[in-house]
Every structure is written in structure tokens, then in C-alpha cells.
Amino acid sequence: SAQFHAIAGLHGLSKIHEYRTALLREGSLEPLILGVRGNSKFSDSEIQHEAAAALSNLALEEPNRILIAKSGALPALVTLLKEASTSICKVHAVTALANLAESSGEVHTLLINERC
Image (cartoon, rainbow, N blue to C red; front, side, top):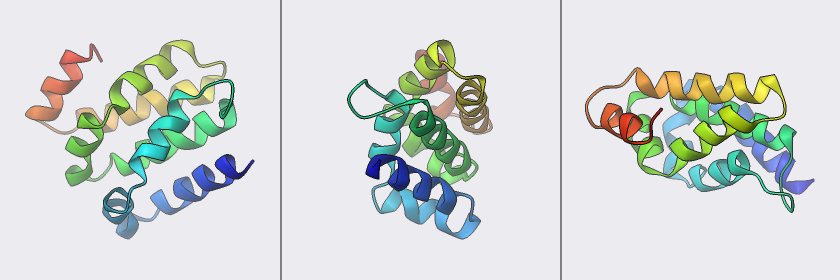
């Protein structure tokens, strides 16, 4: 699907250190969160896997962490961790949460408030 290819492309770009901050600045966060959330109409486990992996990579950058934590990604990642049909989706969800936890201050407060 077009959505899968778009999310997979963002995942590929998120592997490149120099692109990570720009990806968030240019609006990649909302489609990634939608991909992680999934729904029967637009998503499947492959899209969730690619989206969670991209968020995990983006969360490696300190400036991105607060943006991701405030964006609505936390509940989506927690739900994916609890309910994903594949273990690889769960691995990427928990890795994204772990990368976010490497931050401090407000990000930790948001993680605690979302029961992460």
C-alpha cells in the first residue's frame, strides 16, 4: 500500500542521524503515530512495525524526545506494546519508549503520566 511505502521510507530516513531532527520538523510525526496506532482500514502489523521502528530511531535524538512525548505517541506505543500481534512490533515499541526514557525532566514526567 502507499501508506506502507511512505512509512517504510520514513523508517529508512530515520536511520540517518543527520535527518532525524529534520524529519520531525517537516511533519513526519503525525503519520508515524497514525501508523503505530493502526486501524483495520489503513494499517497492519507491517506498517505498525515500520512506524514504531522509525519512532525508535527518531527518539535517539535528545531534541526529538520532548516532541515525541508530547505528540500523542506515548499511548500509541504503550498500546502497541500490549496488543501487537507480532513480537517485532513489541520490540520496536519498547525500544522507542526506552530511547525516550534516556531523556530527563519533562519527558520522564510525561512517561510516568502515561504509565510507561
